[in-house]
Image (cartoon, rainbow, N blue to C red; front, side, top):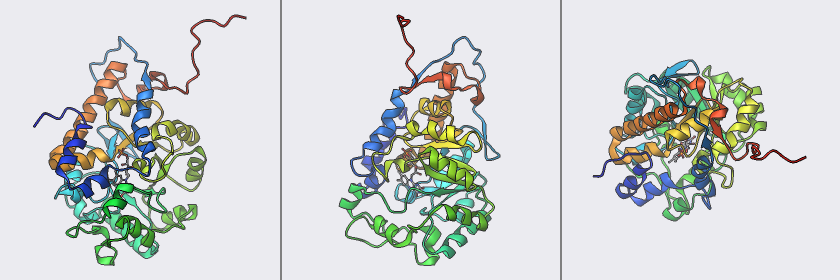
Length: 370
Ligand code: FNR
């Protein structure tokens, strides 16, 4: 096999290895997939303003997230059904994250339970929450995550209904019969029936609470003392409301372009959110991060860290735990190199002046004639 030298290359390997239904589920975005392409394209419209002749012999990428020290500002986003990619699924991801010294977020819809993932050993982990209509189920699950040592709840707020992913509709997507939604197994919510369209879309329509609103963010704080990250914010307005309602952090996310198509890329939405947050809570980003340069651009626009989604499932499919380790290592190496070549020795030295975006005021080349 040809050596893998960047994160994107795992996608083609995964496509070859996986059954079509699984690959399509991982890869696809909503409807026209405009936002899916834009999540990547927008990064390429941000350019660097590197600083030179700075001693970059030592580069420190460490950071502290919600009080937890990690090796780099690159973390793992929640993605569902990881055992569909590899038999070790979430176990492999948890081990890879912990050996890289970073944070893994476990999906509510994992094919391994919170307890099973905790049993893989030490590691800083967040739990992603989908709010079910049955609030007893939610309260029980949050308590289990807390007991299993998870350190924060990432509350996904962009999925009152599932986005229209046409490949899943065509494939009549369902979870393979040998897998279950492990966190819900004993609650009679662990399996997904075949449907006339996407089985997952029907499951969401049946179980997920469409009435979810800001008062539920408050409610969540009455059932857990864990910090709550609101995942799926794209506007300044919602940033302010999230902070008013007690959010400990914001994740700028468009769900990997799988929900509402024609929302902006997350890197384009980031700065608006950062400004609205006014430094009161950390702001994170996910969506389309595939290069160390992307990580740097997000930090230059004010993110405290980023999360990766698809690279994890694609590398899992290709090489299991070793693949996820390699993805994290490649991103780390590229990010370190970007810092060195930009003249930044620590994350605090990365500034807005290290990049230029198309929405920055043009600098006139010729003095205007008066
Ligand atoms: C996701 N995402 C997601 N989000 C969430 O809150 N709960 C979930 O269970 C899932 N599941 C899921 C499965 C798959 C296959 C994908 C691709 C995405 C969204 C995910 O957390 C994240 O927002 C995006 O994946 C980030 O974009 P990239 O890195 O995939 O471009």
